[in-house]
Image (cartoon, rainbow, N blue to C red; front, side):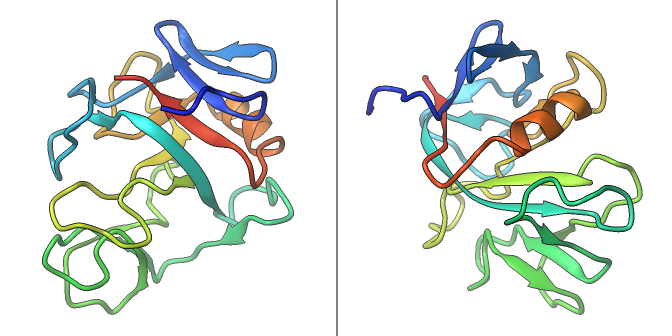
Length: 168
C-alpha cells in the first residue's frame, strides 16, 4: 500500500486523521476486510481515491464547488449482475438500486470512493461512501460515517489527490 500523504483521510483505531485533526467515525458492521463482498457489511481495506461528491440541494448548501446536486430520481445500482453495478443511475431503473435522496438525512452529503469503480467486478461491493452517521458508534453497511458537522468540514477541504486509506 502506498504511504499516506498529507491530503489523505487515514482510518485509525480512534477515527479518521485528516489535515492534522482526528474525527470520530464509524465503519462497517463487518469491520475492515481485504476481501470485501457485496452485503458483508465490511469496509474495504486499501487506498481509495475520492471520485465524487453529491449533496441534497433542497436540504444543505453546496459543500464544495465540485459537488453535484442529487434529487429524487438519483439512485446507486447495487445489482451485481447489472451493467450499471456500483454506478449512479436514474429512476425509473429496472435493477436493484439504493435511493440517494433518502427520507432521512443520512445521504444529504455523500463523498464517493473509487472502491470497485469505474469498472465494477460483480459481487465485490458497491456504494462505499463517506456520509453522516445515524448516531455515534452505530455501524454502517461498509461506508465510513461521521458527525454531520465534521463531514461538512472534511468535504470543504478534500481535493483531487485525496484518498481514503484503510489498513486491513
